[in-house]
Image (tube, rainbow, N blue to C red; front, side):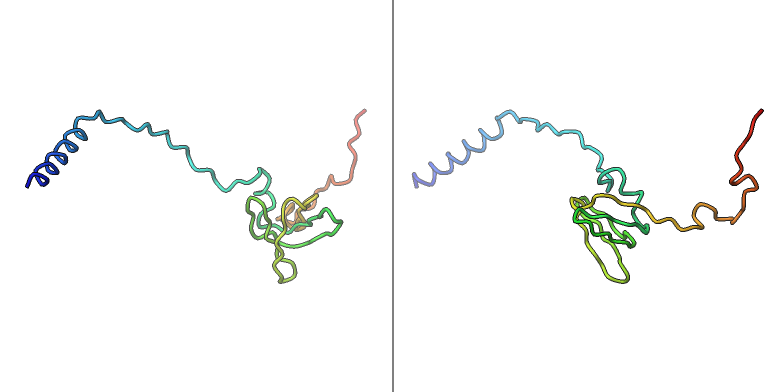
Length: 118
């Protein structure tokens, strides 16, 4: 019986000590807003566009960049999927659709004429 009483007293003492300890407020750091999927500043310029990608070994890949991640480009080349590591990319040149710059097919009357002032 003494052991039961001793254990019960130990439990009570432990519970009292736990209650009397000052509770330390955990410091919560302010939550930073989550970053958007911006992996380098210029990726949105080529995402979902036809491009020519020149690699470090001299190879040129021409296709649609369908997805961009931090280290990779997913390029669709003639129906095949090519995954390109950004570390190998030397340059990317967007291929513009001729109608992109002139969607209304207007022809400028001043095109090709140099302005002359006297």
